[in-house]
Image (cartoon, rainbow, N blue to C red; front, side, top):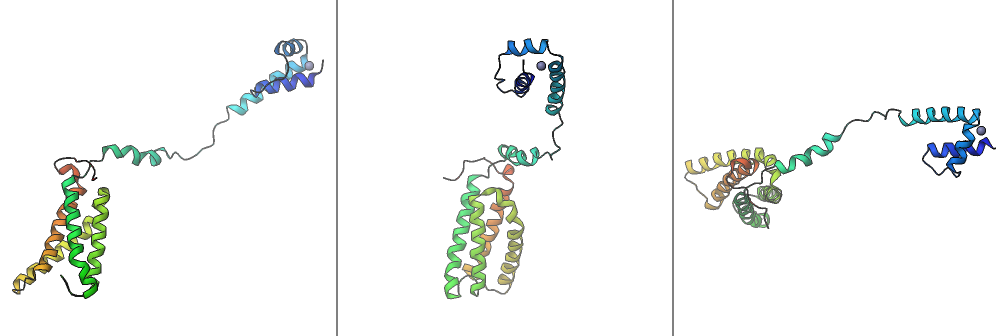
Length: 196
Ligand SMILES: [Zn+2]
């Protein structure tokens, strides 16, 4: 009986493949063949050592990959009234500023300021669309609000109250309040559905 064919069949069985020989036939041969018995013992040990070799060490990224996703359901939705309010503020500032882009007149002197306000509106509209970005915009708008308060105070002290400009300053203050509510939605009243 050919040991090679039997050993091929034994190897195939250990690898989970089709041995190509009848099991009873192989067993009968191994029972009567010391060489193949030694082969079975050796191959079995080798096979086991290959299979149980420890896995290579890879960094555990589970938390990094699953963390943000798992946190998502806990996020409190920004209240809808704050989003609609911010939308109104952004659109109003935009309408007040866009003409100045072309004429250089308007709520403030110069096109540069108008360009800045249009950029601010773009940022506010982004927050209306994606409320989770609100916190990132708070420091900038807070700084702007302080500057606006100073500007209003100086204007009033000088007896000058250009209505449109003051409206813009007030809008910035209102926008800051709405941003704050959206950045801390748990302090707002009702968690509301997303904007349509
Ligand atoms: Zn044999």
